[in-house]
Length: 305
Image (tube, rainbow, N blue to C red; front, side):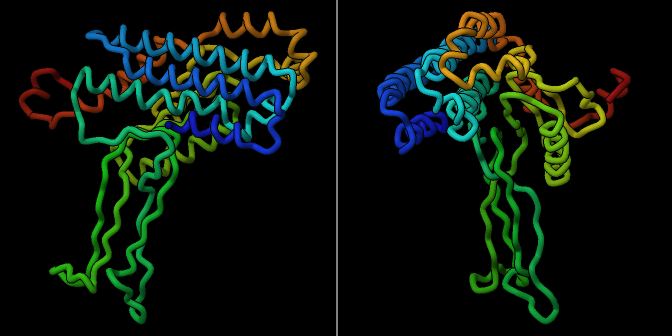
């Protein structure tokens, strides 16, 4: 069971969950299992067709989750606790690794990488030691940071004062070195943008060849150019702005949700997840496998590098 399935199970075990929502969540878990099985079963010889089939399944499942499970609930618990329960915003986190793995298997067939949600990747290294306190292996210590999505390779770092790397004088640490990192948001506001800019800078200081992307369902800010930041690209998965706050205020009660249901479902249907945007993200990733060493004669022939 992936991260989204775990969030559904955790919500079902929540002591504050209204009894009438138990059956709704149990039905959703069945839907979830079917959704994952259908994703895994998708097959295509064409990358655009593969992505399109995946996004169709995402739209169908996410609509059920947003409307039939959360919005239509006669209780207010699931809607008001969305941020804490993370039922809805964990969907893309589980979806993305499956899509990317299928895409990589189709195009480049690279198996020596890990594609995972919520992975701790290498952030920095330092040595907790001094002349008076040398510490084993110089006190090798690394910091890691949890990422919503990462394509990484397992990395082992070993440190010793002895070139023989004796067992009693050596520190060996296993970590993940992230080459493609993505932060996933439901609604992107200015504060999140600024935080992501700082994270992108830290990632690229740690791994010079890393790529950092910011993905969101809806835009909740005036667009700011990412060219002056270390963010490689911001992708708006639904190509839409967030519903205005005065309308969202009505969603916190069952009566308010029912009175605006037609408008809400129209908004979701008018702004589905975009296959084009997901394809762009996948193509960004696939391009990283084509980084070849520059050859002087080739560069002189084409005139740029």
